View 1 (cartoon, one colour):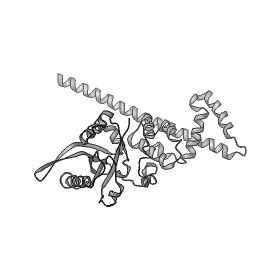
View 2 (view 1 turned 180 degrees about the vertical axis):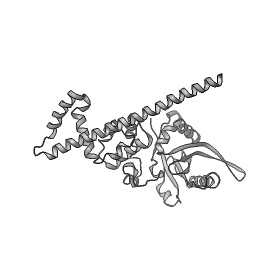
View 3 (view 1 turned 120 degrees about the horizontal axis):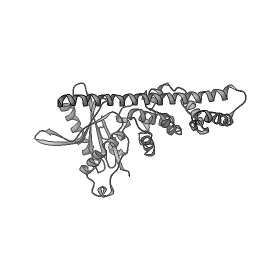
View 4 (view 1 turned 120 degrees about the vertical axis):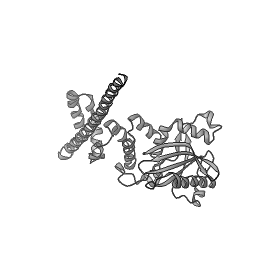
Length: 308
């Protein structure tokens, strides 16, 4: 009797969960339709202004907005129509946008950004991580794009058509919220604890495709046990990422320790179909001169910064 009851409960749960999925799908379709409609409205405004000998200018948009507000509400006011025109001019091809998570509200936040690579970065960020508008605004406020290497920025295209590695998209510095009381006596263990408490934020700082494997991962080298600070697997690149945390400035010995852990993962943990492991060293301050003389193949060095 109890088993039959449990079956009914599970069936009901499945129905509800399936309905939630369907609602989300419909919502995405609605948002895509709205985005595409607004793009087409912008297109019609541009055509009206370019195909007529009389230049309508802003007067045409003002008259149009008054007529549309009467019929369809405040969503078609002067400011909104100007954004739709800007949307069309900025993205002459809207097809790739409508197949993704980006919504019109997201687009209104992104449109003021003049740099094309920067716009593309935030569109990709929204689509890859399904960011809400609030999260998008936070990423822009935290200068996520500005914290990328300059060599990477110029390669960013819409939907990352040009291949950019996950390692290249790891930011520098990584923003971590550390309480002032902990900053005074911060060591690797405390830094690790803070990161684990903010793991969702930390994964977003790293980029997309990261899955958390473990912390203080115990390994045996000879007759001694060692511990990998953080171990991740990246689904997009099909490889492990080993992380070492240092609260001091970069030292050559830090690289040697990290490379030892990378080699262990490659030889003992990874499967034959996995790509070689990447090492990420997070330290208080980097040393560009030291980097010049270090063998840094498959290693990314970045720093951390306390942010409130």
